[in-house]
View 1 (cartoon, rainbow, N blue to C red):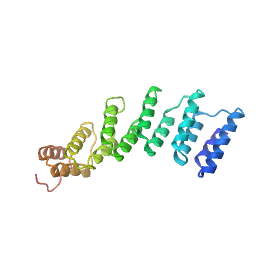
View 2 (view 1 turned 180 degrees about the vertical axis):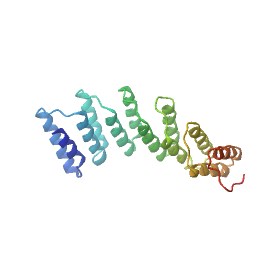
View 3 (view 1 turned 60 degrees about the vertical axis):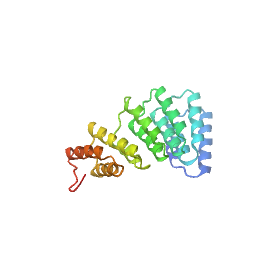
View 4 (view 1 turned 60 degrees about the horizontal axis):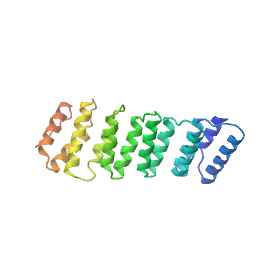
Length: 218
């Protein structure tokens, strides 16, 4: 029965159906059919996607009050919903709660938060999350670096392009192979912002990685 309810939740579309689902959910509990964490997760996900993240958080808090322990999926769904609603400070609060509940965020969770901070223009906050991530047990992946390097081109500032170059070097040091496009983009950005010395360092790195442009003059 719980599986059928879960599948039903995921197929809901209209506001009326969502309100009906909440009614059925409450009636189910009233009749002694206790929901699982997975059922709560499904309801929270539907509310995040098709209703409001505020209502999703009310269900989350209700779940905790009733003695359920949120799992990683619960937190990821809420954090994604908050990011999508541009409630980044609240998303960071839930990221902290996730750690307190011993649900260590994975790299995909961090990448979502970093991406939304960068998309909102809060690049420094995105870098702060990256630093916390790098200093913990969860190491960045190729997507993490690509998100941040792309963000460094938004403001067209010389300092941002220096950060992009440093991130490029770090990702290579960690065993990731950037695309030729990424190398060329950083290289051109450094040259356009007057960072010729650093551009030469990136060019040497690019050569070591086998992505040296055929024709390039410094």
